[in-house]
Image (tube, rainbow, N blue to C red; front, side, top):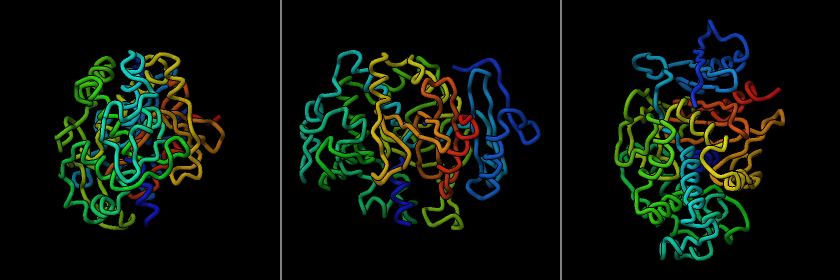
Length: 383
């Protein structure tokens, strides 16, 4: 159980074409039959109430769904449904930071102290020794506030309903991390820490004088026409069409399921609070990996990864600047990001150039979602 909770806590939180094909069990033949079978199996084995996946490639757009969006009404999951994307948010945060770098407004080698004086301090933590780059590639050594024992007891246990609507400012989250010493000297190892991306969001606000939400909207969402994606801020109810999200509160797959759709996600901030759809995530990652959001040199920096094997996170992965490289069992490497937040798992991965992407969401947090997503990618990306 401790291993499961740790993975959950660290994982927190991944342009439309003319042809559209909607899959159903009766029409799931052809090239996408493999991924359709993965969706069906995920529901059949109890991994999730419902699962959706969208594939885009040179042949067009395919969407598949299995199970239900709402266990009470039996409503099916739909393409337009919005959901919380957890740590997939990190790719947006990193992209905004790199856009500011491209404009010459900050450098990846700037210290955290330069932009946030006095914020990273105490218990051996030193913002002057940590660079912006080390925040984005998770080599700062900073403790993850989501692994604080009191935090785990509140947010990754049956106590969660008591904390579901608590609101946090970014500084509150960093302060929790500062009660712990760093895990290692900056740049000497790797660990997954949401603290890094909360700080990155704070730096965006300091550099621009605008909110993180405003910068994501004006630099990414609005130019790409991603009208269903947003940073919720103080909002606790998902805007627009959406299904429900279910959690067993980390008590195992057979435990009681709780509806956790409505929540205050401010505890994720720039590390994991955003809402999106499969279609919008397709648009974002295809634009990002396709070189339409960043200059080539900075995209190369973003895709320069550090192996995470043996670091207490996920195996067969590499971590860049807010981007994950996932080496599949067949040897193919998928690129993008993914994330978990209560009741919702998301994975948005594909080819390095973004020309072939798979985006999927599961509306339950008790099954082996990562195994399901890996099987989806194998079905679509492996020879």
